[in-house]
Image (tube, rainbow, N blue to C red; front, side):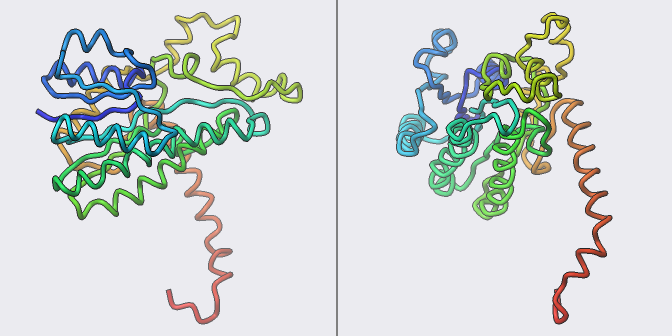
Length: 288
C-alpha cells in the first residue's frame, strides 16, 4: 500500500487516478480548490481518503497543508502535481494578469508543492514526484503559446530537479499527456481577448474549436477527435510508479507521441543545419 498526495484532484485525469488508487486499497491525500468536492468518494472510502482545500498561489498555505498531511498520515510516498488549467488565444490577446495567473498555478504552484515535500522525502529517504505536464510542453502552436510557455517552464524546472534530488532516492517523472476526454479545455480553460484582427485566421479557428462552439462539430464528433482515455492514462501512471525507474518523460496518447516526435525531429533537423554557423562563432582559444 502506498500513500499518494494529489493536487487538483477533481480534474478528469486526477479523478481517474484517485478512483483506481482507492479501489486498490492505497491511501490518497487529495487537495482541491473547493471544499467538499470529493464528498462522494469520502463517503465511500472514509479515512482512506484525506482531503483538504489548498490555494496553490499561496506558498505558505501550501506549506501548511503539506505539513498537516504528513502529520496526519505519517508517510507519503508519491506527490502527483496535477493542478493546472489551459489558456488559449493569440499571444497578443493574453493580458499580463492572465500570464501571471497561469504561471502562478501551472508552474509556481507545482514548484511550491514540490519544495514543501522535499524535506519530508529526504527525511524518510524515499519519494516519487509525478509532475503532470503536457505534450504542449514539447512544442508551441498558434492559440496555445502562453499555455505551452507554462508547460515548457515546468519541463525545464523539473528536468533539472530530477537530477538534483536523485541522490536522495527521489524520482521524478514528467507525464506528457495528449488530448484527454475530460472537461479540461472547455470546462477548465481561460481565453484571451477576442481581437478583431485575428478573425478568420487560424488563431480564431483554433480558439473556437477549443471552445467547442463550431456549428458543424457536434459534441460526439468532437469527442472522437480526442485520443486520450483518462482511465487508461491513470492506469499507466500508477503502473510506472509501482515499477519505479523508467525514462524521465512519459508520453501518453498516440497524439502526444506523434506531435512530440514531429516537434523534436524538426528542431533537430534545423539545429543540424546550423552546425557550421555555430562552430564559426567559437573563440579562437576555446578548448571545450
